[in-house]
Image (cartoon, rainbow over all chains, first blue to last red; front, side, top):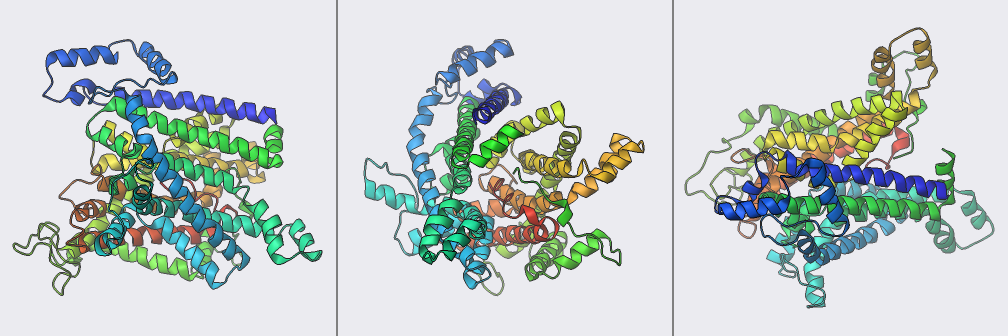
Length: 318
Length: 304
């Protein structure tokens, strides 16, 4: 058990170090002088020299890397080339919007996947099953930016029920926060919901074929109780892994949905950083995304090992 | 991702000794979904190849005074803000989407399969080194990584191909490695090794063909995601540049006119949807035939 945890931690650490090197490399791979590019032609020579000195780009590479990673570990991701403000502060400002969207989207995904996946597994080859299969294929294939635009056309334009974009803080006005959240959350949640639907279906199907389900049925347990206590309880444990991976994606990968709905989250910030050639900001954002992704994956794996003892056993045996 | 494909379930030649591809094709055409998606893809290929002759108007042909016209007999999908025929632009956009998707997947296929073969066949430190490197690439969300690569290379269609190609390389490496591991110790491989065949010969003559089914499935599904990624990158302005007709680009232009001209956004989006859906459905059908054990486990990753 502890052997598996230790190995998994070590593996994550190695990958994390590699990831940090890749992110560090971004600024050195950009053609030309990143500071000059970020400042544009308007900046004075003095401003350029000041930022250049502050960025530490003239130090030896190894020194630069250790300075950068050392500060990053203490929460200091440097200074935005464009605005001159600390990258960490810029990221923190964006977190509430991104977190709202990611959590709401995973809720939407689960609300789609658990009922649809379960029903289609209980009635394989029925019209419901067919519908679930077709709609999960469609949900995976539909471009989220197109779906978002169509939602705006229908629900904001034609019907006028919901705002077409923007974000209102939860603490400012909870009702408006929710109204602004509906369309982006559904748009971002559909693809994850489609992936999870397939997963729930196969997982429930597998659980239905287990001996303990047959035993429960044979001893006369009510069908509904068998489903709740035996089938779903066991089938939904693996959902932690796939659901966790989806959450990690939603936390870091909703760039497009944020653009469509003018949602001031981290994805939008990353794209704006690319457009503004603000490479220090881009580095900070990309590093954060990768770390979130790795950490969520690590937590999910460890959690899963705890929930399902067979996993850690396999891990130790290998 | 750890579950390993079962090569024993790959259809083997029957008593007539049909080649495996013929057997696969026969199984595939029994599935109506596979036929439907295949027909759609053939249609798309025709449009992609001959769009120039099929489109009623040129992609930059402007109708002065005919801006933002609703769909009609002369403009089936209406016209855009510059008075260009949306139907023609959607037809001509097929070529861009298919080309970018195919080249991008070609890049990830070659790089990923090579890495997967080396890692799976040689194992040990080479396996560890290569796969940890793939894990690093895998740690970045797909679209964000493509955006970061484009930040380095600069925007444009060719760079978008490279960016998408890099993003989807790790999944090919993983799928190939897993598949190689299942065949590496098979009797015929060991026989070939003991008869003195060199590594390169064993890898390309014996290991790769037998490890191929999951790779073929992954290629089809990756085409779907690559086309989706190209559209997304063009949508945010980093992929195909104007005035070339790219579906993602058209969609982002249509977004600005959504209140007045819904057709500008509806039809390009529908084209992306149908194309991606066809590749996904075909990929699923192929998986049922070639690699039944892998159902629903792989599709999760690489979606975005």
